[in-house]
Structure formats: structure tokens, C-alpha cells
Image (spheres, each protein chain N blue to C red):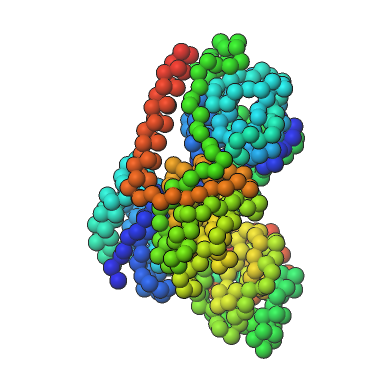
Length: 232
Length: 326
């Protein structure tokens, strides 16, 4: 579909690039993001990419909505295939079960599986990061097997420790910071997903591939001493 | 140096927010009432984005460890220096050892304390705003507590001179105070999903009053009033939200998203408050009411441009006053 534009209040414009979540639209979102990043229009304050949209915040003191819309429409005609979008694979080590994953049993029982099977299925998948949002560095991941899906908890937990790995419906994800939440918790990673001291504070970026690898509690603790390492 | 003798309900270091990191899920934060924040800074001769203290409803007790130039703008929380009521919306000097206290909130909910030199906390991702949930930015990533000592930034020569030469504690000029209302009318543009709401909801959003619930904070104000509903239930794909987005979760009670909003959301947005009216919302206390009135995008933008123009004029006038001390 052709991109469509609509206002989000008096200081932002939403570029809609598709109707549903799929790989093609995701790539388009990343290309538009890369284009905005390289062009940096003078009226642009910042932008937020999501599943099928890129929202651009602008300064109405520099340009008003109609001008921004026309400039963006023009800009998007330069959206060739030449913009190579980098795709990386990031491995996330996870210590499953126990205190780190108090809901691993629930997920197993809910699906008529053993704990071992849940772990094997979770680590067998390759996941794509569809977008970063909800919390700093939080990846919305696509690609989890239906066989380990589980409903959210009826009442959310008030505190979920940072770096906890969870499942909600068909989604799996990692909480980068301590938050309340209703996900079923299956494990924890020693890897920091949110790194506020870095120029790019999120370990993961939209378009990345993610794989989970099981580690022992012992490895978890030695890794935790050096949480930014790619390997222990 | 500022010594915090009592914390107050929620006193945080804020500036104009964190820009450029929302794409990584990092929230904007920043002053809930950016106009009051900016005016307070301009009055004391700071840059608009210098860090101030955002003081919420029940004020802190603050002791000044050095002579200082301050200004208070925003909600009137009955400020006093050494027990004597002080005026807001103007530049004041306070002597070393004096104490700033607050009484009962009179109008508004948030008061901004600017101090010449700015509150000196480290920049985190380009901003000094407190990001409470992530525990970063501001003063140690949290609201102020009793016993905290806050550093004040270096004053520029003009500020030093103004402080030395001024023996009166009150300057005879002020900025026109922003008017806050007990039951404001908030101008609202249609949201991206306005048309998905049923006919009844589309009428009632403009015809009835909504009350700010007690479950309201810097992230957003939950409103109580007529329940709003979609024509047919819809699963939406999460997308960016903005300061002032009015989203409606399944329970039908709208939420106005404010400074500490998440970057994205999946609830339908019935509307978007005009930027110029955001301070009127941020200054509401739980239990107070508001109403919505429709405004076109063109009008909302026009008002915003005009507001910026009048702030520029004020800034020029204040700078003229400051030339006295060059």
C-alpha cells in the first residue's frame, strides 16, 4: 500500500506503511527510519517506529503539518532498495525455571508439556524484533511457537525483576527494567537490555533476530558479574 | 546547595525532557507544565531547559545553603520563605540559611522552583529529567528525600551581579501568571481512532464533564465520567502516543497521557489535547473536573505558534531587564 499520513495532535504526524504486522511492512518501517535518521529534516524533533507506523514529531515553529506531510511524501519517494538495513542476530542466555521463572510449571501444564519441553521449544525458535517500546529496550518479538503460548496472569505482579523472560499469549519478551506486569515468567537473563550510559541505550533494535540459549544457574551468576559481555 | 529538610509528596528534578530516545522505548519525561518551567527559568536568567524542581501538591521544606536567585511558577502551593508568604511568577533573592516551605495547595497541583545556575545533576541521555520507573536521571533517579543535598550550577556573571547588588528580596517586575482553572475546558483534536467510537461516545466526550481519578500520576490522568465505547471491539496495532493523547482502554474510562507516558500504546485514541492546553490538565488535582471542546488541527497549531511567539516576547523583555546587570 502507499504510505498514508495523519496527525497525532498538533506536533506529530503518523506515517502508516501497512495494515498488518508482517516482515515486509517491518522492513519498510526500518527503511523509513533509516531515511529519517540520515536526512534529519530541520523541523523533525524525533521519530518513533512501531509495527506498521513511523510517527514523526515536529516543531510547528519551523513547519506546520501540511508542509511536513508534503515534505515527507516527497522524501518517501527516495525509499529505494539501496538503503541496506543491517540485520544482526543476538543470542540471549537464559536461566530457566526456579526463582527466575516461577511460572515455568504453569506454562508446561497449560500446554500439556514437561518443563524440559517448554525450554527446548523456547530455545529452538528464531525470533524477530518487530519493535522496541512499552519499556526502555523492550523488544516485541515475533516467532514464538504456539505450543508454549500461555494467557496473561489474572492479576498482574506488582514487581517483576529486570531481565526476566516471560510469555503472554503468543508473545515472548524480556523485561529490561523492573516493572509491574501480567506475563508468565519462565526465566531470567544476565544480559542487560537497557544500557542508559550507551549512545544507543537499547541492546536490541527493530529488525534484529533473537535466539535464546539455556544456561545453568552457575553460569548465570558468573555472567551477571559482567552483564554487558556477549559471552561469560 | 539546596538542603532537603522534608521531601514533600513528590518532588523531582525535571527539565524539558529527553529527546531522541523514544525510538528505544525511553520515555520523554520532563516538566508536566513546561510553560511554568520555562518561565521560571527565564525569570532567574537561566536557559529555558535548565533543570528545576517540580513540586507536587504537598511541598517540600528546602534550606538554601547559599544566597540564591529563585523564581516559582505554576500551581500556587502557598510558598513561604522563613514563614513569610512570597510572590510567584517573579524573581526573588533568598539569603543563605533561609527556608522555603509550602502550605495548602490553592490553585494548581505543580509548582516549579527555578534557581539561578539551575539544579546541577548529571545529564543522562541529554536530559536532567528524572525517569522514575527506570531509576535514572534527575537526582539519583528518584524523587527527593529528606537529607538530600542538591548542587546548584555555576551562575553566569549577570546572575552573580544581580545577586550581589540586590538587597531587596523581591524584584518589582513579574511575568503575567498563567491562568489555571478549577474546571478547565480542554481543546481536543479528533484522535486517529475517533471514528471507531460509537455515536453516543463521540457526543458525550464533548458534552459531559470528566473527573480526574485518584489513580492519576505523571504518566497519565485517568478520567471518570461517561463510559466511552467502540462501535465494534477492535484489536489495534500498537503505535506511538504523544503528550496529551487521550486513549480509551476496554473499561471505557479515558486516560490522558502526560509527561511520563510510555512511548507506544495499543488502546484506541479518541482525541489529542491541544498542546497549548496541556498545562491546564497537568495542574489539575485528583477529583477536579474537566471538559473537552473540539478544535481543528489548524487552530491548535495556530494557538501553539502564537503561544511560542508570546514566550519569545516575554523572553526578550526579561533579557532587557537583565541587561541592568551586565
